[in-house]
Amino acid sequence: MLRQHVRTLQGTGRGQCSKSFVPAIRQELVMIALFQGLGLLLQDNALHRLPFDEQVAHWRDKTDAQLDEELSLLKVAKKQWVIASIIGWQAISLILLGVITHQLWQNDYHLTFSRVVIIFTSWASILFVMWYIADLFDHSAGFERWLRAFNSRARVTPDADSVECVADALDMTRRYPEVLRYKQEVTSKRELRHEDIVNMREMGRLRRYTELLRDLDRFDGAPRLVANA
Image 1 (cartoon, rainbow, N blue to C red):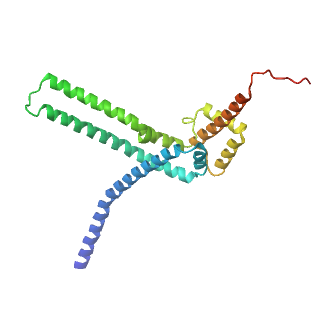
Image 2: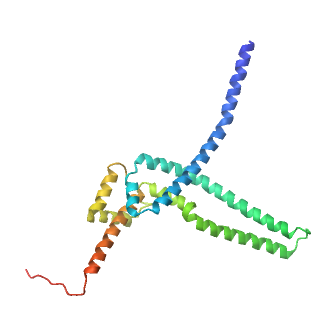
Image 3: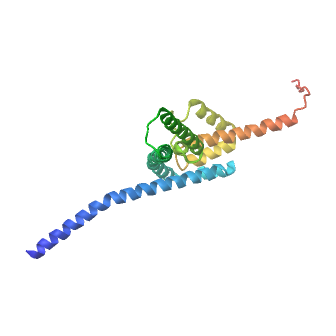
């Protein structure tokens, strides 16, 4: 009887420990996803600084499994980043406002109109400066950068890719062999993604630019001779 009671208590203890570990494990996984997402953004930023040929090769070698895994990671990390950013910016602004308030009421606690105006003006100025800093930061690791990283890996949809963009990519594919070769290599392994449309259009644009520049160098203003049949 005593052994059975001890086993029951041990089993209950294990159950309580396992339940208490679940929130901690989930929180740890969330933080890991956030840092992994930030690492993925830094990799994308480094990729965009490379020559265009290396960017094309990077996306050409991607598989559906890799892109889907990155999409899932970015989906979780993006939400956590928004929450962390809001809490962080608000905490900083409130701390600065608290310092200003402490300096104003350091000697006495009289509430005057001028002090109220200073508080609200300081609060508005702090929010503006922080918004400006966040806007500059947004292009490298802010919310805009998260959306761009997520959308670039998403499958081609009418919402993300307009008819004009798809038609332009199709025209470049028909006109230039290297664009067609890129499309064939990609579709042999996976579905087209938004960044593939961007790459095909950019490859065609660069090829078209080279052709126009060559024609411009050759053009001397002389009239063309039309051969009679």
